[in-house]
Image 1: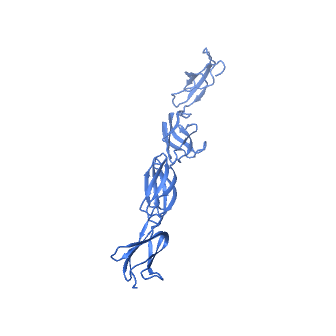
Image 2: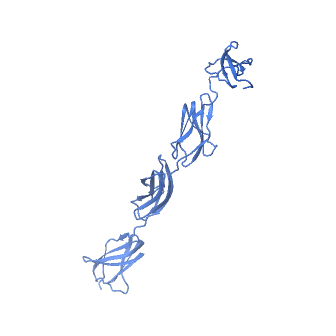
Image 3: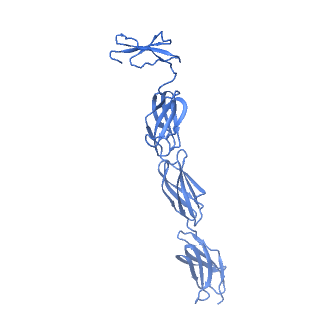
Length: 349
């Protein structure tokens, strides 16, 4: 406003000759609304506070386009809710209808060229984001474009997705001939699958439902083969059902003791009533022989030495007699191997 000028009076005409008062403004801007799309003429004069007005200015002409020339104004700043490991929802509102877009990136001011958008013209805006990375901070600006192509842009905001499930202290415990216990600590997972098998293709699976808070769990694996290497992998699931692969680990079940190559033979320099019994086992084990004449009670000979080549000498057998004999070996874990019943005859003295 110029010195001594209190207002400007605006006059409008449709023929350039006959003008009528359209309105006044205290600034140098006046919005003439509710017009039709035709040619209008305007002239303006400045007035002081006593309503003394100067001469009209020059006549200008303009045709209304019927279009907005500025973007809609934001009413409610963007907020983020429904945040999970891979999803989030951004909402905001404007004072008139526009489309909705989000420019998103993992560095401040650096956004992906592909914006997430919805072309519907609305004043309440909502954009659902998915395929996000867990435990990641994202930076974003909201954008909205009206039907006349005017685009508004918010300031930059940020949010962080929920962390991915985590595992620690994974171990195989109490590994036996046919079973093992997989122990682990889980956090931010709703379920854990334990895959296992004799190769990294696995084949077996055990599932356990877990708490989102950090907790310890044990999973029993049964029906295993002895003396075999097993591979196992833990796969976690978040609250949305997204899966996260873990590393592959292994353990080996102990071999079951097995008896082979049982032999009976006399002992040099000993009478025929003495016999040497030999056999082999695949793992170090004790030695035990249970023997007796056919139809009679049995006697036992035992050695607690852990060996794989076993030798037991039994004496004072009766000549020219049939004996039944069973050998046994027990490994360090208490697993027992028992041979089939063996029959032999002592020599005639």
